[in-house]
Length: 160
Image (cartoon, rainbow, N blue to C red):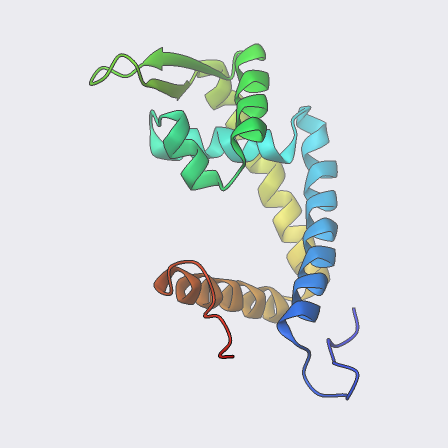
């Protein structure tokens, strides 16, 4: 990918960076999707299964907040994981109206296999991109994420 430059040759505006990030996102997701196809699971389903394992027994609301997925996409992913016996839903012990999602034994076994696949994909991709690029990208994403969260998740509006 060429350097992101504006029409005047200077560093690009954030709008051009967003376009470049979308292309980068698609390229990375396509590669991860291809790797996970070996385990017959989508990237969204893997992300949700991994989050459920990390969070223990999250509610759907907690999963939505942690994943950033729209409710409809989250529901489809959880339904598919439930259909494949990777997760199951139970009422929360504290509030029976709230539903928690839990990883089944079968889901834990599948997640172990997927984790191996993802690690292999990460290694191959990092080798291809170069560790310096991966480190720079990771640092930039973390820094921007922290700053957006400090500002209420929205960049300041320009003065008029």
